[in-house]
Image 1 (tube, rainbow, N blue to C red):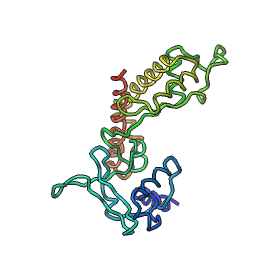
Image 2: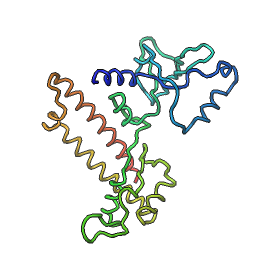
Image 3: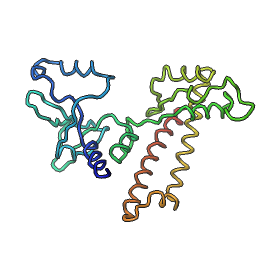
Image 4: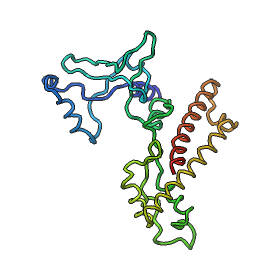
Length: 252
């Protein structure tokens, strides 16, 4: 079973997904491929998985106009298209997609510094705790808890983007305020408090990474180097989340 899981993840982490066998005549109709892409936006991912030896050895970079990997149905071949001139010996990158560091961490075991697609998701319990810290709701525990206080599952999650922006910001504060029973300005304070609390937690976690307990948690009996590599990866991940949260703090 372990061998099958290893083989599966080795393939999936290197595979390219898409619709690689559209009708041949589509290649000769200008703009039709774009129309198909627009019509399929928002739908579940479909199509085939393919392995492309050598192409899958390219590293990911989303910040500097990474090169484009296209399927050419007329040639029934993949084409790696350069977006700019390259010098001899210069490394060529491709983009794995608009992925956050959470997705890169989980799928490929690395994080991208200063990732423009990185996010921080505040779950309902974090937002409710922030509202409680501001005195906008009572905690659910204890005999004095308000029957009308929203449960954690009633509070929507909120996604923080880079540079202090929120996903669907126009509606995010309105939904949060409605779920908690507060005004939109108060909802903004709730998000700010959640940012401050999460930033403090991330900074505390970074300061703890050098402690012996982390060495034990990530220890690999046969490889001290692997243990240090895992800790280094986690440090990089936490550092990027601190960057994202700090941007939101500075904005407010």
